[in-house]
Length: 322
Image (cartoon, rainbow, N blue to C red; front, side, top):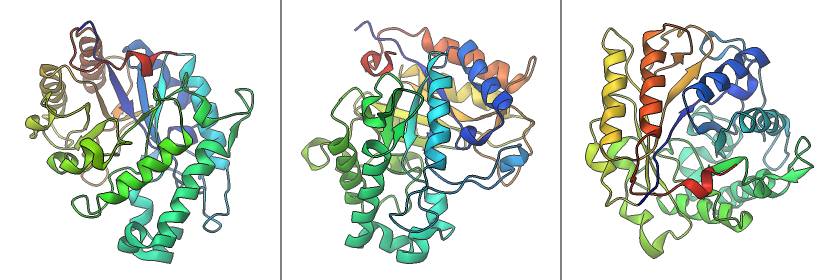
């Protein structure tokens, strides 16, 4: 097989950053040969990780089904900025952090009810439909997101879904709703990922969950679940991070090397244009793009090495095409 692997990065609030910071991240990604940027349709407070991002309301901050497209409009601009740099987006429809923090879905249905209450499931399905088939990108000919395969690499129902080993059918239902709205199979559907080995579930394979194209695997410590990257797992797609500390640079490099051993693509923890404040446990490895920065230099070099790998077990070339 002639397929190449590739690398990418995360930033869940990049669309809310000042233009200079947003473009600095995208320019760094381009220079490193990264092909995919993963972000989320979620509201954010100002000053995420001590950055200068603006506050952005969630899509349904004013009530379920009452859509405020501010976040979508900002992602529209990000979509264009990324595209001219050869980067496509992987977009999550929602974040578990908003749910667990008691957003409109959490306060109405509770965390458990969000995944099991038929009314909640239907409301979320309508959210998906609005994002993909209702909202229009005014910067790209007023086209809906389901017609932006040249800009959008993939879609996922939710980031780091709660209670990963229960209610797995919710992922399949939400994934099917995405596919119902996106006819182009080159816009891939991801599971959204969960904690390491729990990301890989038999439910996702075969006829029980037909809309899923790619299994996302999240691991924010050392990459301990290498078996999850086996080529026996259909289209694994890891997201990695590393605990801040003196060994982080070496750990970032080690994680990428482990992923590269299987020649599968992956995205690293959140890239930043400002210094990492090292808040909380900071497993997501907010890597500042800076000249002579050890973490960024390692990440950039590793990304280029990933992109140079040939004979990868999975061919993403059609979905990466601009």
